[in-house]
Image (cartoon, rainbow, N blue to C red; front, side, top):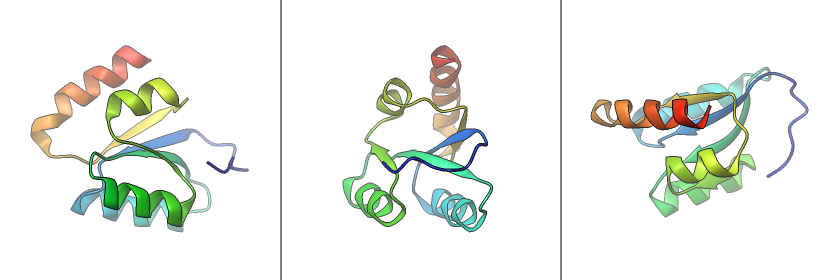
Length: 93
């Protein structure tokens, strides 16, 4: 991962499906956004994203939370998964 010069909160994006891609594109257009990592179980989109944007990539939310220091998680996964991800984020601080 390339360290960002942006001093704002460090963001982790969870999910690179349709809505995750929308969030990713918007984050990358804003120079004040400090996206540092993504969590996505599918290898191909995760690897492509990480390579293109020089982000850290993780195959699970648990890996992202245990291996990075993020301030904000943007959850872009199916609604049925939100509760478990929010609880994992809360437990991680």
